[in-house]
Image (cartoon, rainbow, N blue to C red; front, top):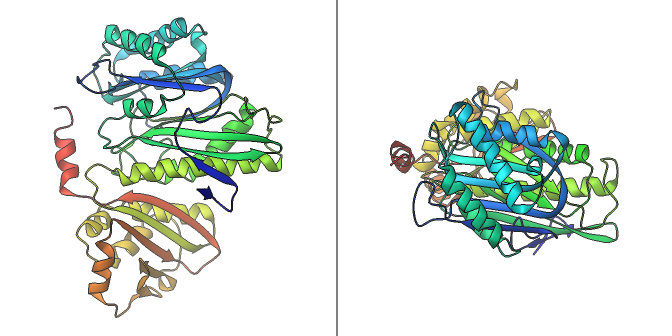
Length: 407
């Protein structure tokens, strides 16, 4: 499959699609038996590294430790556990996160400062370090190019399916690959970052340029997903670039850098949309498109506001073409616009023009909303900028899942 005007080819696999990366996912019985719950990703050489972290004021121990370890812009391994978040666990939690890094380093024979640590799950519970260490040792022994899917499964919590994506593209005379895995189903809202995602590439990219590319792509992908308005204590996006593709290192000015950035956006967007499709209790995937804005940032803010509206999400679940909820959510996004110029579409059906209702066919609109994927479009008719956001409907099951999360 060729994407985006043949600029890249979509590949099977995720984090192990790029050259030099191996991964594993094992069952350490951290919280539940019979499922994978510890993942390890490893590059055979040190890699340039960049990351985005949760903006929640309450940050989990692994977030704080990973920020320390990534301060130098390099990493070689990522260790992740699911089931327990290691958040709000005090000095002991910091010590456990550091121990995860140091033990992984010992087993792999690399400095602990080159290990990224991540956790996801229940807040306020200490990690069972004996099980964690046993799992790390088992994962290290299981590392392989075929282990990417197992790693994607091991980082899941309430997710119903693993999420991975990869693309191949050319940088000058060299062929490069980008691949990633992600987890996320609930407690997700635009406020970088919005879940756990680990992305790898064999392209050679300078650390500062890598960080810039991740910020740019993240703002247009992970930061455009909203499930329920909550931002977790553990959210993290990490990008490793080991340079084994052999291209001339990208510094941020070359045409190839912008191609790399677009390919990164393609991977991030696909992972983000997978998260939206897998929203807790979701029955429908929602894409909100805003056109005719004066600036891209404003279009994105409005799109996120509409996608995040509980009333819009409930209307989509109920298959009710209540376009008033859509324009109301646009109006509280904090962006000035003229409501008397707004056109609104549900799928291909226009339901409002110039801020006023049209005599549209309600049954046709309901039929559009019955689909598994729903597109809502707002045209502000004020400029040429566009923005996107993704989400899902709000169903009865969302409450059920979160009412019994710890059980």
